[in-house]
Length: 177
Image (tube, rainbow, N blue to C red; front, side, top):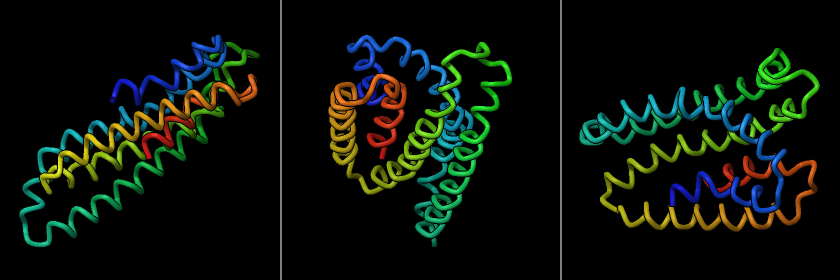
């Protein structure tokens, strides 16, 4: 399910020969991934080792709720900052001047939003594990993968060619949500 969820939006662009859109999205994906690689993954490494102890403490639920709130605010702040800076960074020399790859700056907010949802899902997933309801994880993964495939097919068919580079980011955001 994770493979389908993370990769399928790109598969459909390749299927409709939208190679330029794939290139633009690849750049947007690299920039938007800063939210995941720079914030979500480091947080998750620390959080996953402490959450079980915190859950057992008096007031543990309240602590977890506060962590969720502050983590959501941090992720949102990083995603907004990255979204605002992506176009100037690209124009400053990360891509060839005058190239269509500067369009990647338009897709970064969608990718960043997707990783905000992904990061918040890490906290929710910890709750599922604490409650010993692991079947819910599988069900959610199946639904998300199905949504990713459905959105990929529909968006590849109905999106005008000039906007195809936006569809994988949109698909990621909706699927991760």
